[in-house]
Length: 247
Image (cartoon, rainbow, N blue to C red):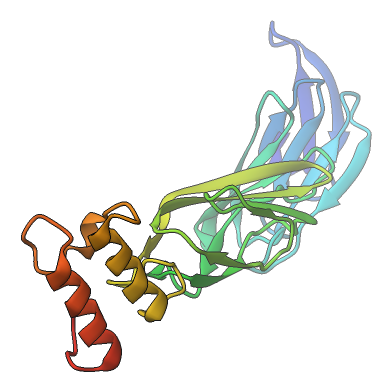
């Protein structure tokens, strides 16, 4: 337990019998132990946390005043999980920070992008906004493609809804952020070859559908009569040459 007024930590056994004590020099206020008996304590006044071994040998201290990764403003609590990860309630910054046993911030995956929807081909710039100073990145874009760049650019060429995942890693651990349906890609009406515009290739494709040389696509039923027919072929041709302004 922390004996704040006497600037020390005291250790007792499960029966409440005194076992050991060690001076801390500072008035440490909150304490936790890891699975192997290591002791962590919070120095709220100096915005740090300290570590001792099971015998009270000082092993290190980490932290500083501020709002960046590994910095604190009046930390008020500490806990350690079964893996030895250290959780600190960073009170005035209104957050909980997680550290490895070495006192390094664990990574927390986060990302944004310049857009989340549009017509094919849709070019998306992704931005890594993770915390914890990651040194490696692994993106999956939901269409079978991946990237290990920090801020990748990806082009979606097929309509659909795509889940994007980012995994970030450090020497101490990793974290994954999945975002289901993050990207929505649609097809330009009348664009059947997937190049993002209605061109002569699309006009030809609809004509082939009409004469049975290509499978009929319900999206080519522009006159909405339940079939792809000569009226649809004429409509896309008129649109292509500018005779009409919409399909």
